[in-house]
Image 1 (cartoon, rainbow, N blue to C red):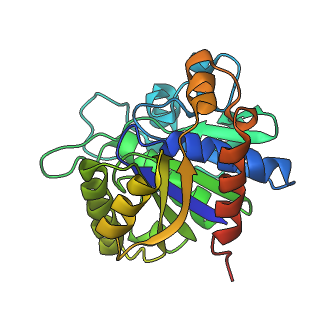
Image 2: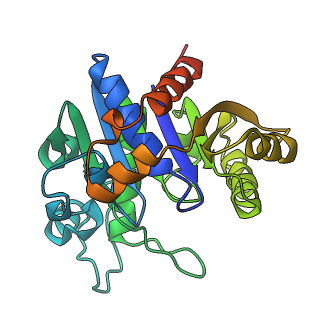
Length: 255
């Protein structure tokens, strides 16, 4: 199963990616988690030792030059658009508690679309991980679909948009859904997070009546405290974990 998670910054998408990864790993799945958010902190949320020591793929200058034939930051007229990437996961994954993690790093953007050696390598790598890897892949993305394309969208079994009870979060969710549909991604569900009351739940269901809700995660100070202190999120709130397990059960499994 391939799962992509997006949402406005601060809604809790990294928390959801972390908890889903942990639940699936504890259930015996081979889990590969991809941090494709430019503000990469999934390693820390998962409790990886020395998370700041993990180098994003986009910053591995020697690897990018070796695989594409061009060095990042230097003018290159030609470079490989389809570089070899099928061995990168084995060589550059970090692993902890049965979860394998890859940190992608920031995609370069330009006014007319920047296609540089870094982007070529990241694009080919994401395509390989989603289309050719026989394992459960969970991708923590920014508030968009920049790491996905029409060729890889068909591999995503579930696109999850994380929202919180706020107008801006709802607007971001609508923009993400529009971008996802533009590349052919149709199976889009919503997970509401930080729900403190029935009124907040009703706000979201009323303003997002045309979305499919997969679950409503209650606000819990235990999760917030664990996040502040660096303790494992998975053991910090029983009621949150119950809802996460319910969300796992609601996900569409590949045919």
